[in-house]
Length: 343
Image (cartoon, rainbow, N blue to C red; front, side, top):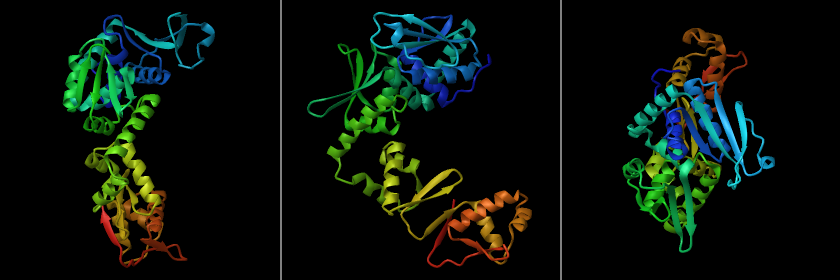
């Protein structure tokens, strides 16, 4: 693929990784170095698909050949000794002057698009980020850089983060609870398991100190005065989607909330007598309102396969809205004290 690619968030992740650990000096290849095999595999997968590349090489360096882990990369792998290496590291290489030029244009265009700032920052943090904790409840998100980087500062300013550049530590240091809230909301550490774990351990200790017990759970119940998705709740509470999903699961087990799946979205509510359905399922109820119909009848009405009708009817049955008689005809059930919402 040598044409101009359409930018997306997956590509932006690779842009962030490459800005952190890529070789931006060479003109003969696309190169990315890291000691985390998951990041190398992710970069290889996305770049390989982007350019339909077949001539990818992975170079593995270790201080002892016997200690090099056997990992399948599904491409040509070369092994080398580096006596300075404290742990094995890997270099992705895609040799092509033409692709290198296209890739640098992709990087430039991605960096000019604010829509991709969250995913670029995720990639950059996976490559160059770390979490520092210490005495007196010190919590710092670090992004290593040999010198000040105007583009990184542009992203940090875009998210209104509180930071300084520590010349001695050669890194940007991000502090203050509101900055951690923002980074949690974009799930900055999601690409790297160990960093993700450290980030959330530190962030959760923040919440324990600054909020009363069950603050966030009670806040969710307060916000669910009308049905909302977990993404909407994450935005309103300035928390990560994963954190909100976790708490909603706990509240569901406690029978304080329930959810309805509508067109690939989960709508959550605390209203016990509410049932949420799609417009498609509303059509079924409208046809069954004054008559009983078989699956084949409804299939003919909607001009769809009977299996799709059967699936929708059984979903409506689980919600207690329809049932069928001994002759296989479906009918609408009369429900007392139930409210139906269409999404």
